[in-house]
Image 1 (cartoon, rainbow, N blue to C red):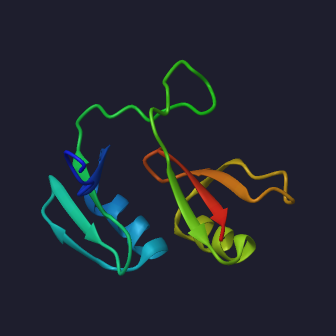
Image 2 (cartoon, one colour; image 1 turned 135 degrees about the horizontal axis):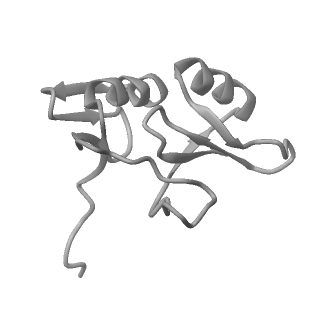
Length: 119
C-alpha cells in the first residue's frame, strides 16, 4: 500500500493568473484562486496549481546552469495541431526540430519546460 497519492503539482511563477490561463487553454478545466495561488482542475488528470514566487528565475533547458528539475508531459492526439495551439497561447519552442520523434519540447510563458507527446 502506498504511503501517499499525488494530489497537485505546483509551479512557482511570477504571475499565477497568467500561467493558469495558459494551461487552461491547453488542458481545459476551471481555475480558481487569488493573485498568490491559482488551482487548475482539468477535466482529466491531476490538478495543477500556480504559486506566486517573487524573484522567480525560469529553468534553463537543456543547460545545467538552472536545472529544469522536472517537466510536464502532456499527451496529445495530434502533435502539429497541439503545437499550433500551444504557440498561440504563448509557449516557446525549445526542441521541436525532429518532426519524426513522438514528442516536442516547449517552455510555458514562465519558462517551465513541458513536452507535447504523441498519444
